[in-house]
Image (cartoon, rainbow, N blue to C red; front, side, top):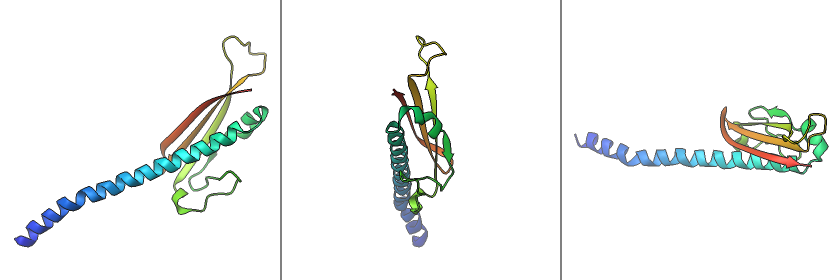
Amino acid sequence: MAVVVLGIAAAGVLLPFTSGAQVRAEGMHRTLGAKLAGDLMEQIVNTAFDDIVTNYNYTEAQGQVKDTSGAVFTDSNYANFSRDVSCLEVYVPQESGTVEAKFIRATVRVYYSGREIAIINRLISE
């Protein structure tokens, strides 16, 4: 009887610790996701305006996320991450469709195990 009571009490005491570990892991994933999104957005902003749309419309598959030098992250912390980027020309109502766009909307999405955990949108001007 005492062993059963002790087992129930121990389960009640240990439950918050496992829950805390899950919350900590989720926080780490979101932090790394925000870093991956921010790093790629910084790369886009530092690219020549005319080259952004051609160079930044792609998807990096899970486990194939690249650093700024173009090498795939080999650290196991990045194994379940994927991301995609889309850059589209944006016309304001005052512009006609015949002129070159003066703005680009860049969107970077980061996923962890297929679930979106970070997104950054930015309007870039010439």
